[in-house]
Length: 364
Image (cartoon, rainbow, N blue to C red; front, top):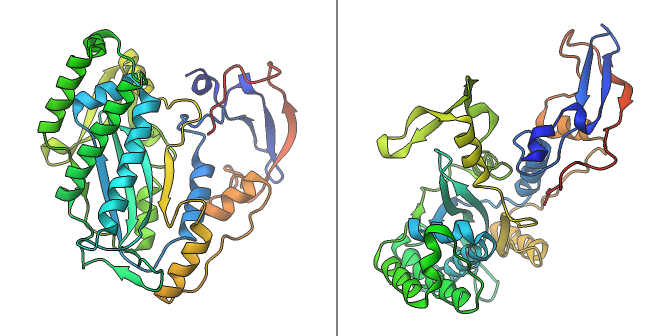
């Protein structure tokens, strides 16, 4: 919170820029670099997209969402590192196990998963978004196994295995003393109460949602890029801030996805935003199967050969962040916003009043 408060203010220092044509001047204050800040992730996002674009395969892509029931979400909020890790590991094991089964696909798949902990109304709702190519490598690595047209894996089968593996992992974490309970959840410290909650969760349906395949690889990046490097809400959804209240757009999926305006007290808006602060150093984007970091380069090259694709690479980037941003987005940070002809040049720098950032930086 402290990082976002001082982002791009004099508290972090900055520099003065002047146009070399019309002499227009502007102050440019330094960014906080915290990964939760909605203003500090644009360059990281476009760089991530460029690397993912170099890995796209010539096949359909599927978007699969794994979520947990509300009572499990409450446990997750008080035990974020432990339960988030379970969510990632169980999701990956579920997808890889069902995909490897010859009754379903019979192949080694590759995918990446992105953690979300929010819904459109900013309430706590942990779930994973997985983007999966529609196929995989055969057991011997000699051919590419394609999925059926517009169908990847049965969501019913995925849901059953996901539920079983998740509850088993949660029970192991409880038995190992890795879970803590406070406030309204204090009763779950008793093993019988915790076992009863798991039994209730086992009897309800767990939602695994599979969207229709994307129209093409570029649509994958256009979609995923909106969600990978932000937390809770982006600035463009803000409608108004006035008289101690915040208004923002939200999509009500229970009402035919109508776009509505949420009106909250400032304190409530801040509380909802802070629900989604990640554990320090926690990696919210992870890669599995033939996209896992250890095997990615070698196995992607094999996939391209089997699919008859040409090799791909990431172009060398400029060292200056402003030039990198223009290369990747086509938008210039150097062009004068006043005359649209000149270039903004640094004419003066001013340091921050602190020797180091007045807050812990979390740029993981």
